[in-house]
Image 1 (cartoon, rainbow, N blue to C red):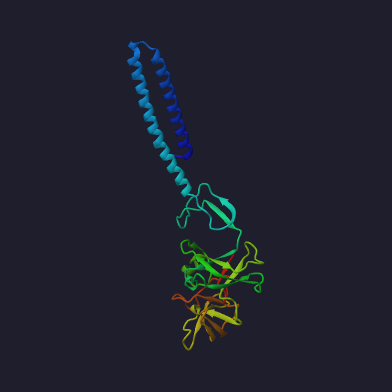
Image 2 (cartoon, rainbow, N blue to C red):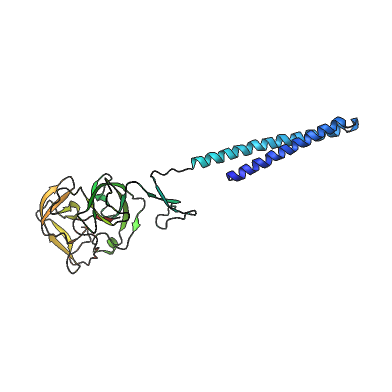
Length: 294
């Protein structure tokens, strides 16, 4: 029952009660002038109508309770947005997401407050991110233009499948790796345009002269011959020995002093990495970069 239907039914019952009371009043007047032989008939009619009035009054109270419950249900179903913004899209008949099976949003709101950067990270690399982690955001067209921020949310409930890996891979399974969206809140968004594509890097960008690489990419970092998996000019996997410099404990990164250049493409080291294996490049990610965002 909708609230409108309930109110219409209440009005209908109220009109019925008024009509019955009018009939009772008319019969009562007629009874006063009726002969003695008709008094019983009038009394019976009046009592029957009075019984009908009581039944309708009961029906009114029951329907009134239903209407009040409907009102409370509607009041409690009001959802208040946690952000200030502009309604971007309303979907009056939301369906279900083909991938997650979850119901799609009824309304999309574009925040008018601080910008958040959306990035994607593969399931192999998701362990590198933690909520609250400091990151540096760089403009793609001018990497000297940077913004500071921190990881706000890592949405592991809504994975996205992709046909191309964010990283290098020598296996088809990695090329189809699942991606997870994450969001970065910026200290300031001055100079950043809505929808602008950027690079997202771990750390604050302070004291990072030279090439620094996260420990997870370096095999045997504590050994005598640490190495990384690199894609050579023929797009084949190559095991390359590197020389390590200073270790940054806070960012869990090593300075690479020899063996790797910023233009090199590196591969996530797993059991499937073999020398000579074919790899597929993602031109948006190179050594030292983490993820792309917008």
